[in-house]
Image (cartoon, rainbow, N blue to C red; front, side, top):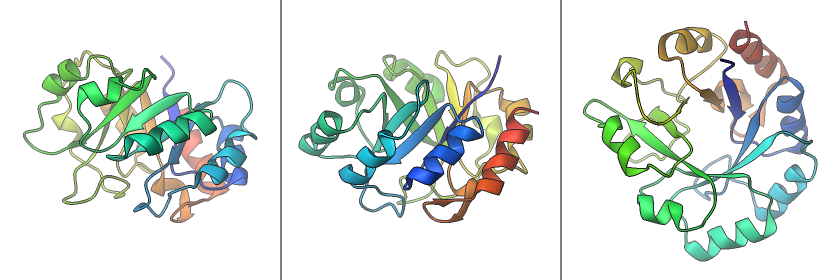
Length: 204
């Protein structure tokens, strides 16, 4: 089965188009002020308006105020929500929108239980755990912590680059991979050469 690719932390139209040109299935827009990859609603609208057909737009939220989330959903075309904080299964489902739930994985994380709790999620996005940080750390976690047969599709994130993504796919066999910092020249600014190299390794 072909592994899907989401390029997250897009802040510029040209980076979105570059990601799509190299084969990204989805782009991620971060609606979280504390992130260096945060986008305003206006930025998001400009990016989404340039995205061609058959590319999904993922909106990332971290413990966001409900009014703000509803404003984003009203003003920006979001195909899939990504909850990256401490949101409960009920909160994630309450928007009536397709969503994925990010889990920060460390030793002792019960991913089987998470898959049961977030049964309405379209997938679980597995990222590295870092104290006090919601994500985007650029750190790789121990892939052996992922059970072989979860009941939810796995989107693998956390420190993926052109140098390790082929090994990650071979070992984890995820439904999709999620890359952000691994294809950047600086936080929020993507590098076309790194994007091309990453995609080449995914589809090798």
